[in-house]
Length: 329
Image (cartoon, rainbow, N blue to C red):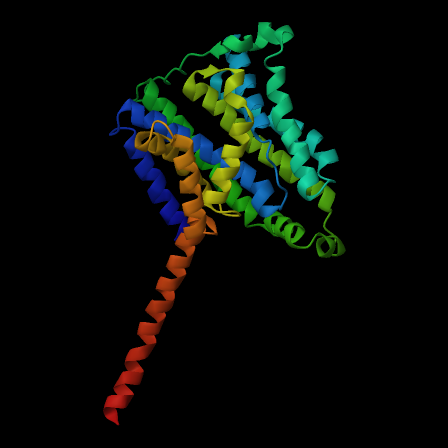
């Protein structure tokens, strides 16, 4: 049923490319790529239990790697996305190997340092030839493959949908397999996980690398969607925003990444429409309201409602025979 539901949702989203205007397709493309980044962060935060507040760094690396490759026409756009993801995987593994020996607030502080350090390199004047400095890099939309009935905006949306679909399917299989169970064991009780023969250090490092891979691909796709990259777009606030998406959507939830992405994409605009003077204050109050109403995130709240509905259904299915017995007496 889960696979069938996913296929139905995918088909509906695909059909939307023929119905929605280009601006709405742009918004949906942004939601999809933010969801990929949130899912990547959730792998390390929700399933492995390692707090990271610096994943915006990998988002920036993925975006700039794709922008530089496309600017110099060194590779096709789809190949640039793959290269950016692999690059972030390697960097995530190399960075995660030493810092994941830390725990708690020490680990958070180390990732915080990553989040504020990496974007600074893209502002360095010595790299202006590659990064464009403060002016950034402007990109063109990818061309539509011959024979497809799409315009450039429609094709970009369909491409994002396919990339997100593949990554969500891979993430779903990952967290529900042997590796996912090992990650949860490390999160809940590292000592017991080690006693069971799990290499906790390697698992944490690999999970961090996979998380960076997802975030790097999201950053690469965002560069193609927005058609522009600059250092100001990848500050620490981006890392915090991704973490907000993880918590609001639901920690340790694959589907929660979608809800979290919808929240961080549309709620700031909604808050701005309510008050031009205090948009971020309203945004903060909305986050508090969601956490109060759904401590387990939106996905957790939906899961509770579904379970309650099933219990009520079972209760009603059991009650009629007892009523018949009473009537017989």
